[in-house]
Structures are given as structure tokens and as C-alpha cells.
Length: 133
Image (cartoon, rainbow, N blue to C red):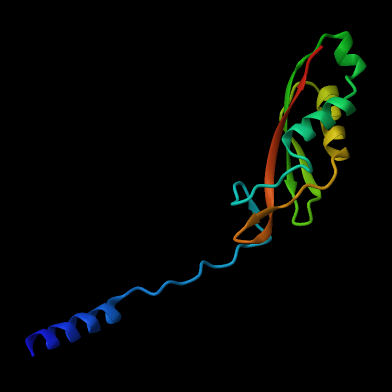
């Protein structure tokens, strides 16, 4: 009898004080995420993106004449449909080179969008573009 009562009390306390598992809230689709479960991806991957840049880059004449070189860091938002918006220069080299970096990014095809909890979301994305003579 003691064991039966002890068993019932243990079982009752287990169900009374057990924590319920709730699903996390759905992601905010208007928020711009910095990191997601699945980051956006260029069609074909990072190597394909670098190849695209290499094939389409046009070194500005003024920068070539003045021997200007360096790394431009360019940022943009990959939208839920894969399009790119809010293209900005995060690290500048010179106005001519920065303009060329923005031009190249504007030629990119749509990305594979980022996902958070199975929902496509907006994601901030940064890439470096090297300009070397």
C-alpha cells in the first residue's frame, strides 16, 4: 500500500510540475537578420560568385592610372524572393572602385534566400571584392 501511494504521488508530481514544450514563435519576416539557420547563397555557391565577379569586373581607368588597389567590402540585403536591395559600401577604397563594386553586385542574379525555422527571411550579406593591378 505504501508503494502504491508513493507511486501515485510521484506520478502526480511529475505531471503537475512537468514543463510543457512550446513551439518557438515564427520568425519576423520584415526583420533583417544577420545570421540565420540557412544563410542566403549565390546560385552555384561562393566559387561561382567569385567567378562571376572576375568575369565582369572592369577596372576603372582613373584607378588604373593612379595605381589604386584595395579591398571593397560591400553589403546588401537578400530579400525573401532572393533579390538584392540596400547595396552599400562598408569599406571604401576610392569612389571609382566603389562605383564598380556596386555595379557588379547590381548584376548578380537572384540569390537562394535565407531561411529561419523553415521560413524565408531577409538577411544582411557582406562580401569583399579585391581590386588588384
